[in-house]
Amino acid sequence: MRVGVLISGRGSNLQALIDAAKDPDYPAELVLVISNVPDVQGLDRAEEAGIPTCTIDHKNFPSREAFEAALNDALDGASVELLCNAGFMRLLTESFVSRWLNRHLNIHPSLLPAFKGLDTHARVLDAGARISGCTVHFVRAAMDDGPIVAQAAVPVLPDDTEEDLAARVLAAEHRLYPHALRLVASGQVSVDGERSAGMPQGPGDPALF
Ligand code: GAR
Image (cartoon, rainbow, N blue to C red; front, side):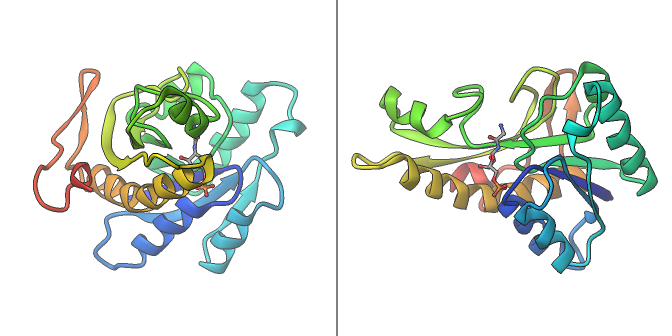
């Protein structure tokens, strides 16, 4: 399956996908990485891996629609079949989301539907939650919303700072995203009505991390 990745920054989740896709049996090939922010580390990671990149800076477009038309042109040009947001920090319009419906994944650093949005780890700590984690889900127009593909849970420890928790969740993200993309790209998980279906259970399931 030909996969495009949308990023806005560091690209550590992109790196996890790049590393997973090196396995010849992995069912997804990364064919294009697009950043909406120029000169970010994620672009360097893609270039080092020999993956074509482009920067489509939303600031250069008069409207969200024009920005998204440029995204679609680039994605179509690379014959992308499945799209992954990996730290892509732009809201997308209903029209873009519809075009990629059920072929578009996002990763978020919380156990959705809890703690959508920004400053996730600070809000988890403020709430006194004892467990946090990360979620890979199919994208819908509402922020951090949509049918869940897979989740991984991590403990919140008593003396955790925001940085401690962020690092523990990020390590889980790097295991979860390659696993979730494998499930979707191999057809083991799809959307049934508005729920994702077909998640295999058992050892190695990230729910057990
Ligand atoms: C990750 O923690 C990802 O879950 C989060 O941004 C970070 C990107 O890191 N995404 C969101 O918060 C989306 N709502 P990375 O660039 O190193 O992959």
